[in-house]
Length: 454
Length: 141
Image (tube, rainbow over all chains, first blue to last red; front, side, top):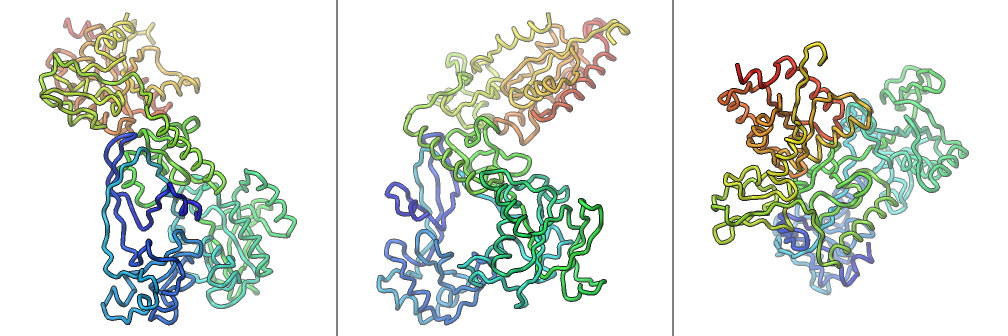
């Protein structure tokens, strides 16, 4: 990330979003809205003294990066490796931005005068040749599976929360401490939460088995707890993954094949008091079991971003049934989209793990650069062509074109061949028969109709 | 069947290249049985099918015409099939005026992944046309 931030030919625009895109392959114009950071990136050197100088002596706002498990100040660095290494001010909580009455300790302390409370939202237009959409994924909201008690029982965690707990740079510095301050003695990890499920998402999210194993390994290492994994099938394809699974089996991590029915705190047997009880059918022994644990981790699956529909409309992308952006061909064109010059990278296209996402992104970058370096493109021969002598300039074809490839030039229609995809909708619309769909002309179609009928 | 009724209809099916044509192909690959009466004419998009083409098919001797494309929202060309969705019902209403039973023309959405649906639609339509009898007979009546 740091490398990308420092690269002379990469311009990183953080706190920014694309609000409009026009043009076509090689000639895109993107309108970008940049939200104010209230700290000037060109002046800040990342000393982070402003954070210490904030009038809030102690962090008191939930830290988004730590999934709300830790606290931060109104001026903060989102996470330790954040690129660029420039803090930002949260206008919701900053006294100066909220009330205008603050001693401005941060601005006072900053030697480079980088704190700027007057910063405003900025809209700018950039000219780009190609676009890579890498908007990522969202994890399934665990509230969608209410029978696992997320939000009801404090010791039910999502996998991301558990990941922050075992992380050395996390809110507990790697110590596994529950919300009630205890250390867990037994931990249950439930796989496929919001994956492979008729009620939520039907697809396999692909990464959960491996991250569950990682969490099992780390929680066990950091707390010495006994770990149960509840799985439907273990899916460990990938280099070294199956070996890691085998290592965990040898370490003594318990694996129970079965879908957990519910998580409850209703103790019925001795030894269950004060614990969370997982009711599960162990399909290996064909018995329903009750397993009391101190901590439950929900391995939530991956789904598309909530604003995927907006992004797909912006870039002219289509989406597959699962909501992720659709690639041009599932096997042969995995990074291209149906819009020329727009490519996909990573989980925006579908669930994948880190090595696969890196490979996918590399492919997208190569495709984008190859297109730019070539400077010219090969288009399909099936485009529409206007016969100028026949065109009366009625303009009926202009609104029907899904690609806005038709424009009126000197009173008559003209097709931009670089934009035309050859659907032929305009050909069928033209009342004067002035547009020819090359390779699908009226004569050719009539000949084909007559051919099949004789 | 054709032996029983003595009538083997000819049905011209306009299929869009991306959804229905691929769906038909998949039906074939999966060894599903679809009626031999369906005579495929591939177009890039169902939006390419002008009313004129449908009439031409009837004039050239088709007993029925099927126009098939991607589901609304799934069009490879974003909105080409929206035009088809507007055009074809209108054409269907007008067919009666030229002496053709509107039932002889149908618009159906079949995606590339819906091979079973392709078979279902084509079989049902073929059955319907078979019951209606030859177009030539209807027109002369």
